[in-house]
Image (spheres, rainbow, N blue to C red):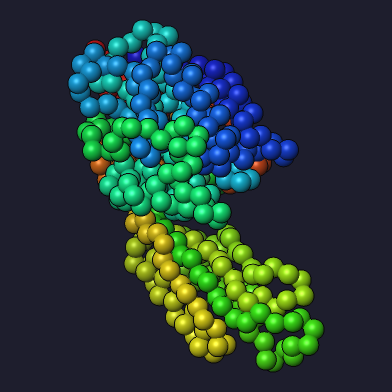
Length: 411
Ligand code: GLV
Ligand code: MN
Ligand code: MN
């Protein structure tokens, strides 16, 4: 087993093949959750899995499970996987690497004819990104019991289309119940999406856990008025108020160094006409920190600022926290399996905390869980320029292979 390795070129070719679906001009991917392109990506994955001899199941949240039988197939599966949906200006690796690394592990087990005690499943989680439908990781969240099914299926995009409707439309509203079954262990391989591994010149990140997140939606209501006749002092310009919130969110992030992150990523101004003073603005806030206590302080600072802004300027301001994902600590044994996989293969490695959210965060509530990171170029992700080397991706996949075999057992 020590000498067994995945085929890095096969993994790379599959990544490049998947990247053709929703390819953008700048070399990235736009494959938003539950669009026709997402369906194409899912179909390609499903075909590859069938070719690898897997059986496939789809649950009511559209999560796809490709299963390679174990010697004792009634044992709980060792599971791995990630997501195929991307950001609007996403890259070729975020999520996709974790899914196709799982497939490459199954292909490698097939190549050498290795039978495992436990079955091994590769999962595609629906809508990890939370870009088209908020919040992020919603389908793994339903799987782990963090949300109920109705909540998951009723998440709507900006046009009011729900996940439930869109799952049906693309043919991925499965009939399996969501979650509620035992999992021996879950591993997710992912690009780091930050600069630490590259800076420290390490190939493998042994992920100890992930920072917490709080997501908010804010609507500021002022008054629409004519851009010409309305004197500056009498205006209630909702976009000016929103811009102050943007600056404050950034300040709150800077106020809690070195780990706090604070982002306004989406803003919609109404009526969005160049000669009407904006009457209503919708904006989103994403706060992150590894410590729950600091996350709460950031929350309190935002609320206090918004209250004062509304009172001083005569605005109506609605602030709603739409998502809270607490900091996560992964399972000690799964973390060790990742570390020993990196050691056995002779890859340089370091412990790391994930800045991004991952499906593994929710899965860790119902299964022993670990994650494997590999570097990405300049730490850039959620960007069409996202890059990772075939060598690093193969290394991460080899660590995944080791961890899965350790947990699934050789028959
Ligand atoms: C998922 O991509 C996240 O926002 O961390
Ligand atoms: Mn991801
Ligand atoms: Mn992402």
